[in-house]
Length: 484
Image (cartoon, rainbow, N blue to C red; front, side):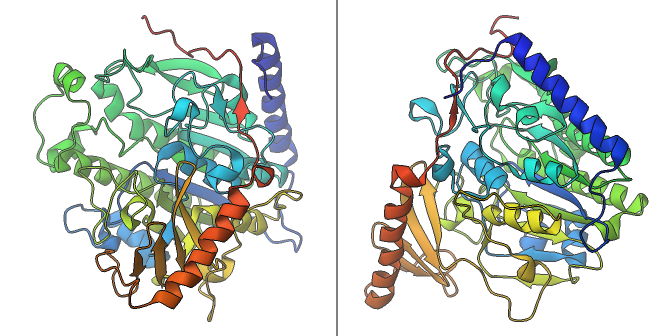
């Protein structure tokens, strides 16, 4: 159990983190792999609520995403890539730990909420070994720029989870005073943090519109600063989560010319119309292009792997076509997400992989690429997918089965082409990607086999001994008070 830290103790911890990062920078520790080769820089771009069909490489005819189209043409796209949860906090816990969210106690927030809220008592347990911690121990400079959403209390912030540098918001961008249910849900103000210090506030829709640019520029500055040593950049954008806006140039391209209406936003926080989603998606494309251009300009392309994906399926106004369902569901549209990987000279250009892969796999795969170590003495659900990443002939998914959870509840399993829901409905995803035709009656033997996987998952993750607790504090406080 983690108790609330005093201000003094937290300041001491923050200084230690800063000094550790400085020491690494001075000594250039771990710049080479065991064979003398340069360790790859690693960039993970994690979009919020981007739908499977929102990008041109995945079939969008609505949104113009030329930079991501080029990224896919120069790299590989994964067409059966899954988030480990259909909502924000659990999916981020899975990426950071390589574990199903239930295994690390973060399948949901406290008080039966689906995600962590401001001043939540829960957060990612500092005893977990995150991807950032693994890479920092392997000699990497580590930076997080964007939406964290794994606990807003000092003990859970990125500086305590392996990141040398942080700039961003601690939870979802709709958890602010303009939300129409802010008073009912006890929302506070939306702070901007630099490391563990509050350095600003997101107060208006104009502030919301500028988040993508600010996070992108902070990531680029970090890349430039650490160009001479291995670095890990985690760029979890707030876009395309509601409330939706973008910078004026992107709004105009989407056909929106009226000024931002703060009063209307207080009444209708979501602004679900497709035009605003399009503006944000095209600005996200701009962001990815800026990151890739920076890597190229610095001569780092052949030494940098970039992974672009989403935390879960798209919300209203986004497209999950041709999948059924959306964010918050365990239909394919809630958890199958677009994913692109790029590493010139290592990842064959123009590749397409339809094998089952997941954000769970990023930790073990990237740890091996960095010369780091996957945590021992604990279950890690992700698997090394380098064979698929590099397009090796005959490479197959390392997952015999992949499980779909909604909160703590097991909802479905996929094994190969088959997906069985716990209500007994069976779908052949190769023939029916939209989950429209239940074929359980004509394939009872398949349904029985997949039911065995569901029973196996219940025995595993249904057992408290196989799961680890989330972090918890006893006296949480708002980072910014409700009153201005």
